[in-house]
Length: 276
Image 1 (cartoon, rainbow, N blue to C red):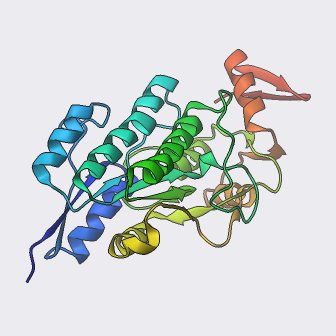
Image 2: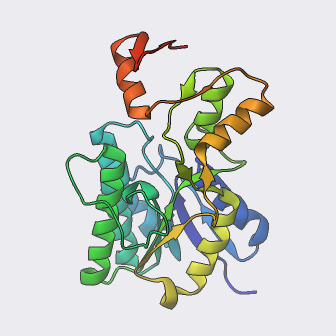
């Protein structure tokens, strides 16, 4: 039996990181070891932490599944979603090993059948999460072109799964329905979202690592084939929980957030409601 390959994964405490670590532990225990240091041991926001750790471990590949929380401020989003990614990419490139980066569909415009090269323009008006993710994608592409970085970027939409230890994405929406904090449908009609089970992702990552010539230097959108109507999903959850809320009245989420910030009791387009 050959020597074990070693991978380093950043973000092992999250949904994606935990799923990837579990995948390699259960399927490749004898051939691949994936190490997932905690943020207390290795902070991707500190360049020396990354360089020292990777130089000591000498991994065969590096995977970044870390991210600042969706509501993080601009400084934290910049340090984790951009600066941390650059630190990891530079350290991986210095070792000459592949770098797999998990990005987000937040970098893309709304629409159907979008190509990987269709992204939002980099603008100061983007929210910190989308802006930092887009900046990271653009920088990785430039590093591949000018410095020979062997990377692959995977864009995800909304992901769910068994290893989710944080309340984000689908789980946040589910809880907002369950505790009745969503009195109305905070979305426009006919809004489609793509939901993917996290357990599908490690198979793709492993395939990409085994076929670098095909996947190096590219970005891929990883979404389920059929998008789901968000209104239908919310009302289906409501029905199964036997709840009376949310009401079948659509209110744009941005408008509702503005109203909630101004007053607990708000009036929007003649509709009066009380924040839970």
